[in-house]
Length: 167
Image 1: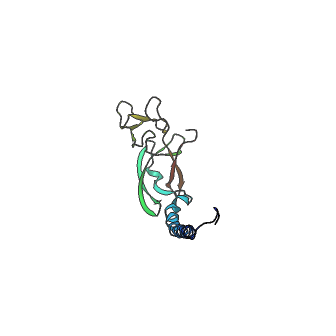
Image 2: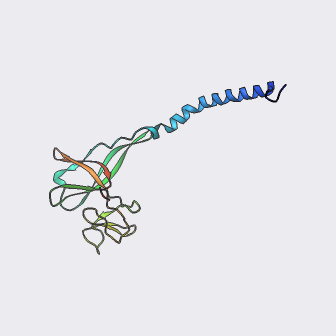
Image 3: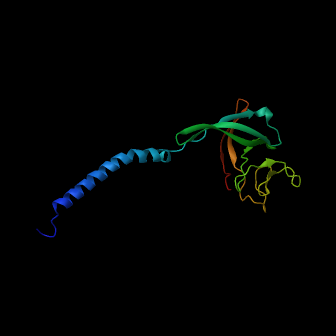
């Protein structure tokens, strides 16, 4: 018997280890696939949702709540979201996200008496101008996100909030 020969015991050990590993991989693959499937699927864009009638939109920002269908892995639910909506001087309808870009607090319109006609975040005294631009020297480092919007048949439809271009 030479050094390269293997014993009957080593052969059985290698064979049983290989077969056991193959069987374990066969059992684990479906579980791994089940866990990773939502991550591997391509995300879908949020559909536009009817929020309000265009007649209710004024020059002063007003908060509107609306529901969207959200799919989180395998779980589907209705989620309530909000938007600050107003008509700009040129007649365009602007829909801003109420989520502060500093730490995710909710901003309110015109609630800080020392800085009227601005969005105000009470968490860290963050401020934004009416168009959602962050005020220099305050906590937020980026402007408020803007919703994709569309007006159709006298109704305002909103989609997903996206960061402003150039922000």
